[in-house]
Image (cartoon, rainbow, N blue to C red; front, side):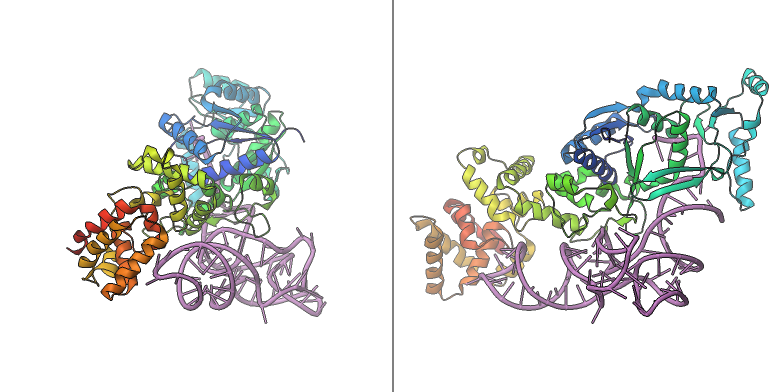
Length: 492
RNA sequence: GUCCCCAUCGUCUAGCCUGGCCCAGGACACCGGCCUUUCACGCCGGCGACAGGGGUUCAAAUCCCCUUGGGGACGCCA
């Protein structure tokens, strides 16, 4: 096989959404697996809706995900001349013709067909025009579109699809479709094929919504004298109502940047997305980059659509639970240095980063991240649930106060007393602190659990967290003592 | 409406091509237990599906047909 060349052709009409990211990912995986090239082509021919901000967003999203490309970005709009030239070639060789039917006439025919409950396809009125008639209309200044001349007869347009197998469409079911607008601008159907031919694309991997117009595109390849690529149509991702996930309908939740902002690890999102419509055939679900590239294949892509399982306003899961669980898995198993770096970005974003964490407190920082990461799901938790380890402005959970403070009013006296005891300690080692606390509790005749939990609420702001004695060591004597002395505010 | 595609636990899926090893396996979620003076992790267990109906066959989740449900394509959008 010659070099594998695939492409990802987003249209820059909004942010990069996860469905597109999945398409990019599949293409990328295929290219990497076969030592091929991924070409990034921005399909910006819809000038009305294309924006530079969107282009930037898409590039940023891909970079963040780690989906790198080998060529491009190319811009479809720069190749307009080529598209027009291709249309002219088709015209000259008799594979296309000028159509003078007006939009109104076509709408009327379409409407009539609808009323008659019959199928509508362009009836070929202008196909029969003689060269003289065409010249006459053109000279009269009548606007026209260019239509592709679908071959007549009993033939079929067919192509090989790595997911769907051999796909055939009878030519008689295909109408003479428009390839150039009346204003002279080429249509997607044509541009896309011309670009893929120029970019020497060998495999077109795209959403199943492209399946329907593939037969027409194969006709274009043939008429343009090019070999058609191998196609692979991937199933669509739907929402719970079985509607295609879209920016319009679902908003931010389907945007790649949303996941970046909500503390996702890029690769975790990729790992989740690849599983939507593909599986390796065994029970593996967590893959390193190398493993996934090795395991990936077009043939194992599913044919049925999958559902992106998120429920709006779900208090517990802000996105698909599986995505969250995969992210949490990476969060607690990836190399601690890497996680610490990602967490650092979050802390910097929150303005609670201390440069010392990269210097003299480096080891403390690493150990702290290690201590708390097992119960987190996203990177943002380091600045949320884990805030007390890095800053003084942490919030104390309402339910923690309710359960561990309010029920034990005596703590209002005990906690400051405990602070004094702890302040006297020669060191703040695990055993030293534990012994001091147990002695303290015994002297007062109070159960240590009550004091421990009250203390946890006070010094970490949380109902749950790491073993208290361990956590205290990380917080340090000074901070613990100060926080316990200020515990009075919890009782108001 | 016409054409095409799809159909296994709530969700992602394995198994389907090459029928028996499947009274259907894994993961997430959920429930229970162990661990833990909290929580999480981890471990153990539980709940939970072959859309329905007909065939074919000694045998069907797997093959065939019909029904139903869902999706897509039918633009001078991309």
